[in-house]
Length: 351
Ligand SMILES: [Fe+2]
Ligand SMILES: [Fe+2]
Image (spheres, rainbow, N blue to C red):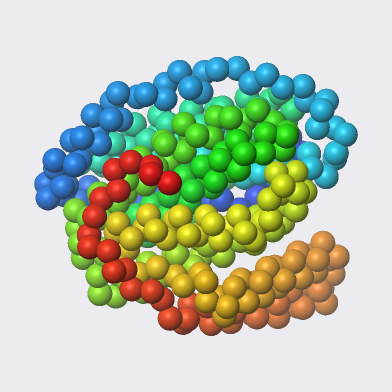
């Protein structure tokens, strides 16, 4: 029997390795062990004391009061909401597994201890989403996910850039949705969004940890590494843009324009990322915006061809993917904005 026939739909969706789906990662644990945080020791110790204080411990233990039948009146919204939850639980659990694996495999005790705290938080986040999914009758089997999902190898520096960005973007997304729904409570169709304010503080703190790790070795933020940083900024932003636009009913229910939401999230993330990254993407450049729209249209076309099936459509899809690659390259070579802020540490979510 194949995996597809033994797990439920949401687990199957979480297992899929489609281009835009969250992935699971492994890295070079020996190389990661060599990171020396001595130069940022003072800030490191404050951060670790905050993790030890564990102020969000009780937050994710509260029960979610919700009548699942209320979602059945709008099946399209339910589909988009489930897509959001499954993609979020995959991302949260991917962080949990990565941090656990690093903790298990590194000799560096500073890193191991940090990873234990962050895995604790991500495990809570994933568990909490799974409780919401369970109420809707579609919990994801996390043990199947851990054992079966394909793992991708990333060099440690790629883990720093990508994970730093996804933690900060996670913070920016949660807080933007939370604040919007506070202003528009009639659009809050599920109570899970009430948890986002304190939830985003965890993601903010995880991002801070990666910022400190990168600042402990400034070579990671200079020279040819700037090209990698630029690449990861664009990859993370464009993936988010395409994914958010694939859930129109969700944003309609929020009373939000997904384009405006995404540019607000880019703005917050870019501003925060100035704490480490030497440049930001010029997301207000009309060419940047047109390029993102083009990537979105091409991604929708590729999905259509995939859904239609057949050999000819497979070839057509390759052509569409080549055009996506070219569009991504054009976006990559657009001028970036130099980071004019002096090196600084953002220690609290002021957004
Ligand atoms: Fe998380
Ligand atoms: Fe996180």
